[in-house]
Image (cartoon, rainbow, N blue to C red; front, side, top):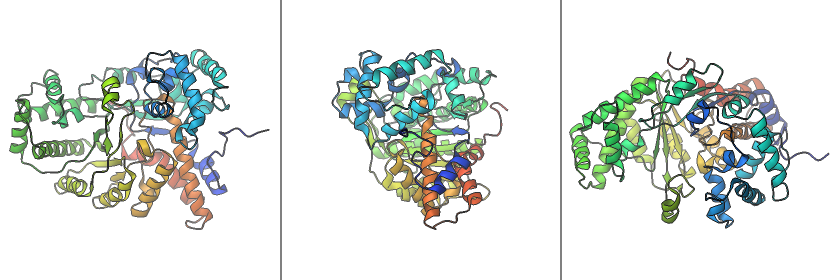
Length: 473
């Protein structure tokens, strides 16, 4: 009988890696400390109408692949019906060989629907019917998927103005074993140069955080919303920053720049960077005071296709890697917090893998007594959450720091089926360690290496994010 494509030893190419995966990694719970799942869909235990809704609505990875094959936008993100969009995706899948989409697609079919057929034009209709039957008739709601995936904690990504209504509802749901915590993402209050900055400050000013007439008021308003998030169990912040700013400024300078922007005056590039630096340092100090983790996602060059952006908006597949230098600003930013003893635990994710070693060596400058792996080189993110990108991140971290302290994988996804990416990562990690054992580069000591695997897959993140207490406790 022919072995299915996704089988027990998928991507495990040595006996040592197989042992590490099956005995130490496979059954570890998941802590998804950064994602873009909808807390509303979790709270309402959303049931998906069909496989296209859960697979294709909002997945810019798949959209980019279909565009590369020349399919019309109408059948990718447009008004075409879901059945036809799924058919187009099925026709696209055989062309994704070598892309992680091929692996992810079949992992998800196997793990969530027990479908081990390869998806292509000839199998599309049968798979469409079977997956839709299960979505409607069996336990495949959002909460069921979290349970099936053994997800212990989900940290969503939330604007300071979010009411956190759904997080509150989830916390009161005693039947849901997964904890769902908010993550504080105040980017719209930082990016003073963007067109919508004043409109966003107006919205903040109208919130319960209080009227904003000055830079001091802005900081008080943001503190108020941080307190709200803390009450709901928030353990971290998140920032998506193209290039980390670092031009230091006084409180008075930052206040003057803020006033100029509120008066609709034009700012120089230096003024923009001074404000962004000052406000980010303020936020870092606040995160440290609260014991939150600061997550920095660096290096995305966004919305490059003006025509596509005008048609579809942000996060629709028109972003790519930036290549701006980061070493001086990163070290300066971390040092400015560290010298005042207010540097929070920090994870730095970079979109351009050429910066792995720059970041890995920078974080080594600022580790701290009493905190295991206080500063982290984040997992392969976005364009790097594939085999080559993950292996490079793991090896660069191991070469320049301590792989054993790594907090591991996250989904960074809007899809509830993306939890197979944790399995994907764990298989790649274990196979790499197995190769090292096979070559004699590390001892074939399963107690030693197995503990490291368990820590990276689960325990390090649980401790790092302080996830031993229930939300609100």
